[in-house]
Amino acid sequence: MHSEVILTHANLILETEVIRGTLVFKDGEITDISHGTTEAAGAIDCQGDFVAPGLIELHTDNLERHLEPRPAVAWPKKAAVIAHDAELASCGITTVFDAMRVGSLPSSGKAKYDNYARDLANELLELKEQDLLKLSHFIHLRAELCSETLEQELDEFSALDRVGIVSIMDHTPGARQFADLGQLRTYMSKKRGLTDDEFEAHVRNLKSISAKNAARHETASVQAAQRLGAVLASHDDTTRDHVSTSAQHNVTFAEFPTTVAAAQACKDHGIAIMMGAPNLIRGGSHSGNVSACDLAQQDLLDIVSSDYVPAALIQSVVTLGHLWGDWARAMRTVTHAPAQATGLSDRGTLAIGLRADVIQFKTHDSAAILRRSWVKGRSTF
Image (cartoon, rainbow, N blue to C red; front, side, top):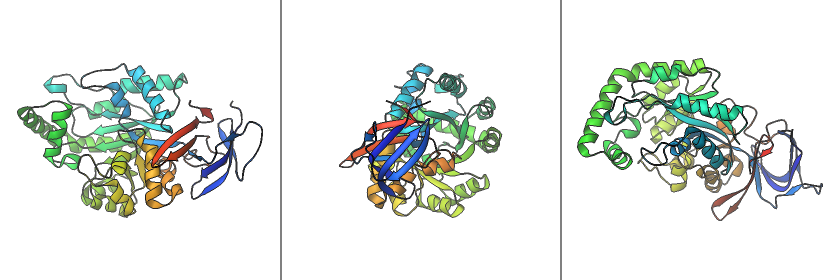
């Protein structure tokens, strides 16, 4: 049980408006929201800082970065999870869906498969069970269609594993994100150091694997989401046909559509559109895809993900707050909208009776500065 916390002299970012007022929470639950201020003993004077719901992260590569801090350098899984959890907490994230790839390929031409998700999930769930993590964690299985082991890896998970999202990925060379083979060549040469001949062999191999497995794996991914009680997401939709297929599968949200046409098709089908905060903040995609700013200006942006920069999530609120002139709307992209997309009805907005997942932050010029954070009423630092 946690003692009562009173935050006053705060700009409270509610679901549809920002008010100057006071927020109270106790025992992990928001108990009161009011206009005006209080001089109650023990109240925290926020001095005009923003107070908002904790950020909800649906897609982050950050855990994988901790697992492999440099190419071919393996870090202990438990240590990686703890460091990842602490880093996200320092960025105002209070709920995270930890992305883990399922669907493996032989590494560097060897017969060994890099299927790590089950062991990683075990480490994460054990730490959670022992109350050693700061945040609320769920699992996001990224199902790679262009692979050889997807069905076996999906079968290792059950409804007891807190799998909240299954996303369908297809990284076949020449398709979706890698429709431009030049972009893939640059990525593989920098990330894995492949020579031109090695790259050409890599492309031929992946295209062959995709031709044999992708259609079957797509069906298996949809079925796995249903079996696990997880929502289904698409990844890198590029064409209207891609989105039509997503709609047929009852996809809830689209991760990083690569074109305006795909984003517009998502809106037409009622599929929420998620874009990466680094794309938004930088003003463009690092891989040459559509700009998140362009989509935001065309009312084609619903959810923001930190993607590969955890600190970018809170920064995206500032960017969108200035772009839209509406801080409540900007905050919804990283709180209420991702909560809705994943069926989390107990969080995502400041409201009496909901979880006390709360952050306090200020801005300096165009930068967001986190001051305090609570997860279910418990301070994270």
